[in-house]
Image (cartoon, rainbow, N blue to C red; front, side, top):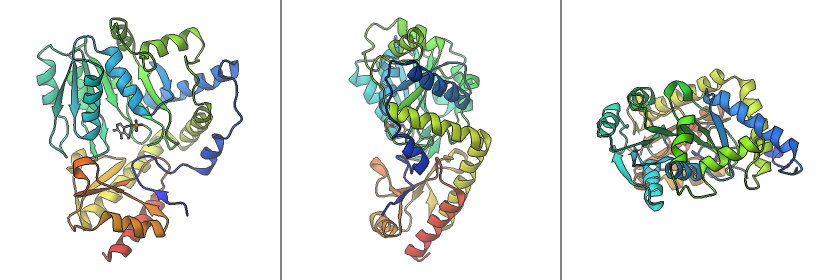
Length: 356
Ligand SMILES: *Cc1c(COP(=O)(O)O)cnc(C)c1O
């Protein structure tokens, strides 16, 4: 039996979107491939509220995260971490021999604008990475306030991980001054995993030009140049199956309306928070709670794996905690094409199983 996924990626994918992956292949050096890829970039530009170029990568989001920190750090990167994915970005920098420092918040706490100000004021850094929505803790960072600080440092390339938020909440790339905004297909966009997307600003491009060893497959400058020279084609063979489905799904997202989609996510988040506060506790403070998933403290010390077994019999799946939070929290994702009524049903099924 298919289990409806309420895990923070991969998400449940609509049947019609899945079927688009079975579109017959086309040559990746054809005009049709150019048109497909150009069309996707134009739609993503709207969803990211940016005029910047869009790069598509046949990889998961981690590929572009690694590419960003490696391709665009000239001096030293300041990596801000509010959990597992920020920590991973730091590891990527170190593994690529990119000088970097990590600034960690306590689990469940956000990155504050003060932390960013203090680090950037040292003048040591020319690239900063921020996790917009931390999928382990269910924290959404105060990115508007952080962006105000970053704007005071025009030499700093601003990288933002929106892997678990883009398409589920409004992220205005140009207004925030984000240079590289990164996302994956398998979260709020509602597609299978296997493609990653980022915006790439002029500032990021100029920074990359000064970096000698940018790697190759994830060299963002190489991707950028290639799509300029070759009319939106890519150096390697992309996953055309994803391209067909992504193009189609972006049309669905436009048809739903961006504002409607963001409002649906917020409403689902509010419902889940209310439910969590009634029966358990939230890990995040209300102010920083994510709109796309909720991390719940396991205050009743339930067995999450037993709960998931019972949910599985009924056709649902939620997520245990991540990393250090594995046993003390569990997570309910409310993203992509999940509808409000489906979430309500899930919550009542959990109540029934737990006898709440
Ligand atoms: C899932 C996730 C990632 C990793 O993305 P992949 O597509 O799995 O490589 C990075 N950051 C955040 C916030 C995530 O939720």
